[in-house]
Length: 263
Length: 238
Ligand SMILES: Nc1ncnc2c1ncn2[C@@H]1O[C@H](COP(=O)(O)OP(=O)(O)OP(=O)(O)O)[C@@H](O)[C@H]1O
Ligand SMILES: [Mg+2]
Image 1 (cartoon, rainbow over the protein chains, first blue to last red):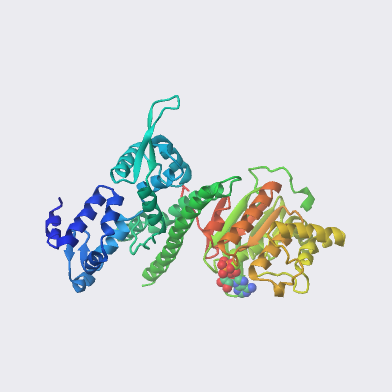
Image 2 (image 1 turned 90 degrees about the horizontal axis):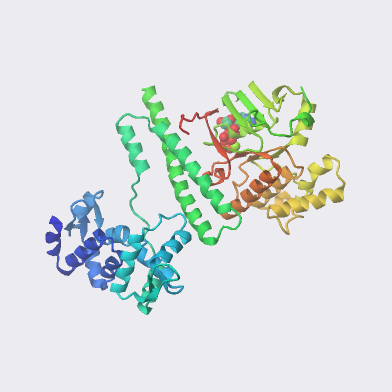
């Protein structure tokens, strides 16, 4: 248990829930985190009133103090929404199981096909997640299938699994309040260290454009299916957002340099 | 100097189709271009990006022989465009180039289909044939049921589609498109870009595409960025 967890538990039920949440996150088990988050509104209200300092994980019940240190403080509810409840492997697997029973290998293959711009799933992750789904009653074993090759365990979704999936799919995702990103960090560090941020931005733009050309080719290829087009669109729009920030930053750097040179 | 008909049909990948070197152009006290160099290769789709006022439109006008640069050269095949007499230049523009201007330039008195048919009529086609082909091109760019609208009755996006159809109807060797999707939403832009790229690839047409939209630039093979009237140099790794 983290050193701050004990202090957290002093906040009674809210604190315990928070520990569950943070543990679940450490465990990469978004499902358990969500279950905890869905506790009655009374508890959520209590959580919302408190603040957690992310670096040390100290619940700070004083909103005023929290505001003065706004960079390092999120409301716990926000923290949970942003960091814990995110696109989870378990819901994607439940979604793939909605079409009928399947085994781990097949699920991995279909995931990588359906979400072509996503990071490919590791087999280990698929099997761990399936076991957790079974543990939580969201999926069950549906016999085995050998199909000529090695024997494989088949899984299918339960009614509760279908309900969980429908609920998750209809839930609004929170727009992230803070964004950190390697590009941003590199530019800031480069400015601080007297490096060549403009040069870096030019090269980074070229790399982004290359990737955007690839994605555009994928998207516009004859016969691309909807999932491919949608995921390429999603990636393109995010790269585009990076690019717009980089363009603005490059322009700001020129103004800055001109001012420094003039003085 | 040669006629446009002597522009080599078969691409020699080492010799650019169109090359500008050291272009300078001032509008009164404003230096729109200074020291801009750019090459467009056979069949290449090249995106030109850069901040507002960086000289993109001026560069396009110089490359397309619409504006003569104060300094530098523009070579098309082996023709010095910047030194070509006006009559030869306008002849070459008509046979080899198609231009989509940033601010419309459709003829207000003519309907969509007649605007697109006009370049064909100038090239000697019959009215019936010209209108039929114009109709096909309008359809390709998603203008359906608006063929008889005049520019004043079109939305900005419709006018852009009509301008693209007009630029491509004669089967030019180079298309110059200045913000051709500037008035379109992203799905409509995608449709228009797909049609443009598809047509260009099919016929080996080179395209110089000005855009401030990276998602549009991503349809191109390559990007050059302008800043203060010159091309931003890229490092060795890019
Ligand atoms: N006909 C003109 N008369 C005077 N100044 C002009 C003229 N055309 C362009 N300029 C100036 O030359 C500079 C470059 O203009 P240009 O139209 O080439 O920019 P641009 O990159 O196309 O910009 P935008 O993205 O806004 O279309 C600008 O400062 C502009 O004010
Ligand atoms: Mg312009």
